[in-house]
Length: 378
Figure 1: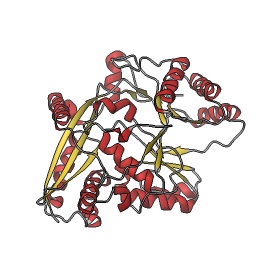
Figure 2: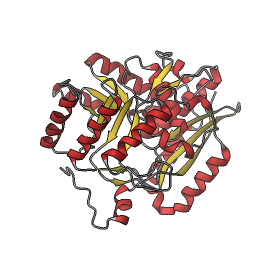
Figure 3: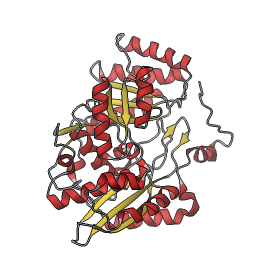
């Protein structure tokens, strides 16, 4: 089996005005769909972060992909070089292999270690926008957002994207959630490096009190983001949980290797998320199913982005008690809705040069012209 064609389709999809330390999400988030086709009529699908530079890098990699044997994944890894570019192509290769062999991707990663994959509610302070979620600019409004995640998706683990309001208000937000959801709920707070060390220690002290003096493990997807970062982080005891992302770590097979390393070092493992569509969501589900020590619920933006999805409608992404049930279809088990893909690609083309990358700072400065993304902010 040889890859005869690599089709790259950049997309722009509607995004709600979610706030973070850097600014606010633009009205559009950028993704790219890669489709690898064979002369036998099979097609493998991958999804990556998108943007003009990323599309250029994919185009450059295509000379190594077309004509290649999709089973020779490690050779492609070496030839392509860039982990974030290779990851999208590797997922498409695994999808292709799964369809050729009649096996789901998680079987290609070693088989299912769990049949139900847990996800965390990803909470954001938020401007009003044109969506159904409404505004969340106070602790009380953010609590209502958390309640909606719990009622609609059954989630009992909540991650707050912090570094937006004053730290004492973000502490109050977490305390309100503890009061509302009780001691068994999992609570996480992510200030995105917007706090100084002193502020971080102060917040930890406040929240230890709320968590009945239990230790607060530290997680990162900003400092430990590549295999070469691991030795120093381990020696300095800088992190207890790696919030990894197969898009950045070099694909699903590399991510499984990360799981083995984390188990060896006694670290926890979870999955990072950025705005994404159903192909990436499916890949995350397969990864979490196949890695035994991924015991922390994964992040996902999918509830925020589901209406923008370009995969065919499926009940496979239906949350039950905050979890997704695994399926047995070959490959990733998803297919493309051609009409939605075409519309999202047209939106990308209409953005022109603005589609090079997401720019939260410029989006924020449209409403606040004097906005500067100082780091740390507090």
